[in-house]
Image 1 (cartoon, rainbow, N blue to C red):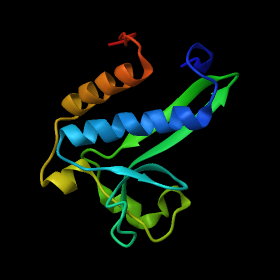
Image 2 (tube, rainbow, N blue to C red; image 1 turned 180 degrees about the vertical axis):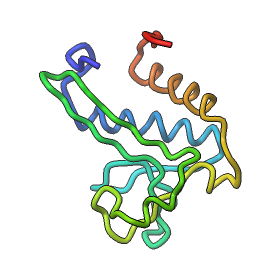
Image 3 (cartoon, helix red, strand yellow; image 1 turned 90 degrees about the vertical axis):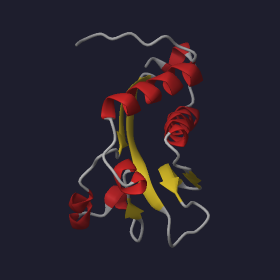
Length: 131
């Protein structure tokens, strides 16, 4: 995205991406939020010992054009996280929609709902550029 068409504020951009994920998760019955000082979307944010990350972000900008990655754990194999310190944050667990909801989720449906929230929050019309 060319942020000069919206706003030149990386912090605001990141919080808007987080909000789109939070709204999407809410539609699936998952209450999510933020933890001050820790980018990402979290569950059980008011109970530090139970807090767990469900979505991570990696954003790069060049001349206000974003190249971003958003990793929402939908049906993710969480065992991979046993071998790393996710996002460099020690002592915090990682979770997925599948784990929280007790079964595999329709990734196409999750993507569609996330796209709706991104389009709404950024006030844009999304168009498919490749199949």
